[in-house]
Length: 454
Image 1: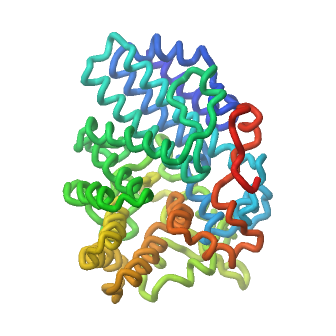
Image 2: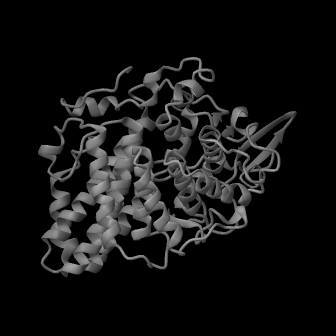
Image 3: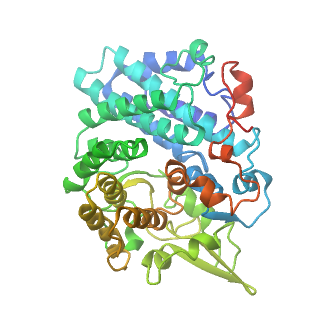
């Protein structure tokens, strides 16, 4: 049985990496029959298939769960600039992504393959006669959490997308796009089920628990403008006592960080894909990606995030500042790091923004100052709704730079993308706020409509 699971995991990794499964939903009929019939015979093996999804995620270099959500939107926003001339990468930096861009296709395909895997898990668990009812609920809750997270990412990259809720390729290969509201409703339903049915004390942060679902729900509700719900979910996490801000910024992204709510761990390495991609091979090497001058110059004097989370290489007479949140690459021998997705600091800034929108400025300022003080900065002088909102926007920029797609998503949800990016990107168009649906996906599904501008 264990050998069968490993084979399935390896197959999933190859599929996600792009060696197979060319259509995002036409993944193949026999695989689900095999999984349902044999892997879901008992709860131990069913749980192992969830681990297989995490392993497949981390075996996919710069995929949607393994650094790609940091790199590509970081280039599209005002965070990162490439030092090389790869056309695929330059397209993201110039916000001129072609519909046949292979990296963009990789984001789409990987996201939907993980969704397929969770759907297969849900179908297999729920039809299994060998899994106890309580175990079915727990495993289903974790699968739905993963599915909700993947849909949240895809939705904010592409807009309304197909809502794939089964493994029946005859149906899913012809699905049209649905509205953003419909996808958000599905995300919320999945996360609320996870919140209600996952425990709070797993003892590890590389498997989601109910507080991870609360943290992601807080983010979702903030993006939707449901500020009372966002504040309530963030408060659940903050008041739980399960997570603490790391006093040392250098510890924030280590595996087992007290601040981490949920992270992906690479099962065989001590470094993340971001560390491998951003950290040069030597102190004199030119980094592949550097922080934009616009970002680096925006840090306040004394901000320790600019000290601990960036680093500079000097080659000849030129200095290159690069992201240094993740400090280990394949050549490093430091402590293990994990791909952090949710952490306590975000919950404070989610709650601060929600409190500000709800008119509770004193509470918003208090939450804001917790993050500023941890960064070595004094309390904010903001004292009006407008200035507090501006302060929160700046704090989010400096706390979450090059971390997931935080900045890219923030600029869009604040309706600031045109204002901020048009002066920086010579070819900027408002339609660039959504990535193109990959052309081969359009070709595979006659009901799939391209985003405007492509």
